[in-house]
Image (cartoon, rainbow, N blue to C red; front, side, top):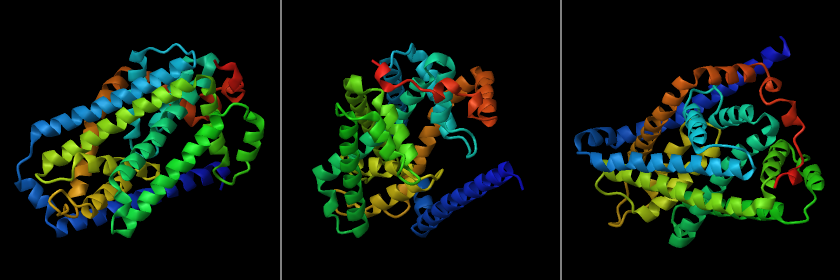
Length: 360
């Protein structure tokens, strides 16, 4: 069997394992929901449709703000980039993030499409996508950490909640220290690279992220403004989840508690599974966190809220479908280029990326 066939078989096996794990998580949650008659209760009780509509609007505004943030990061690298084009590429990427496994991910599609437009500055184009995702993920942990500290959520009697809170606070502290270190003046770029690439498995990936952040080190204010935008993004998503819960159920945890639940659940996105971790985390948090009256939501109700959020993302992705229909040829070309190898997409200029000090 040829090497290419082995790699294809390996990818298929990994994909099937991921799908199997996701289905297993969902099956467990569905069985739990059926045990507590959550589906029947949800069908019988009235819904607050205006509130659910506002939830979709809040999530849509959050997505728009992420695209404005990305446009700002691209322009900060002195690349010509219109907001309208950022919306087009961004919604295409958002659509592909919801596509079945095996199709190119949304961030990768955005990077390739932007790199095709910026032939002379492909490394900068790719760096903007990487830094945009990194800032969003980092601020997700920051928002969750602030909410945990403000509410003393780590004092929960449940060991799982305590462990999760400690893990989030630890990740936030370590990542903050790393970012501060990378942005300090006088750090030797080559020495840092030599140390990072030696880390087994994750070293090269960490280096690529550090390298991307380094391109902004002379424009640190750009990173701070982008971080502030990210706070707005996560706040809007949190409000969206809270409104979905309020539209489905009469009694739900407070908005303040959702500033813990939503970021913590969203942080499970780092787990390489298509679905499952987010639904499980939100459902368990609802069960283990008492509402103002002292009672807690039933197992399975958090799953319904999570599925409502998933539905909202599908509705938002409909905008991406419109952009896709208008850009089918361009997207098809990118997919064909990446299928034939990276050299056909982001070319050799990206491999010989300019040193970061050339970026103002």
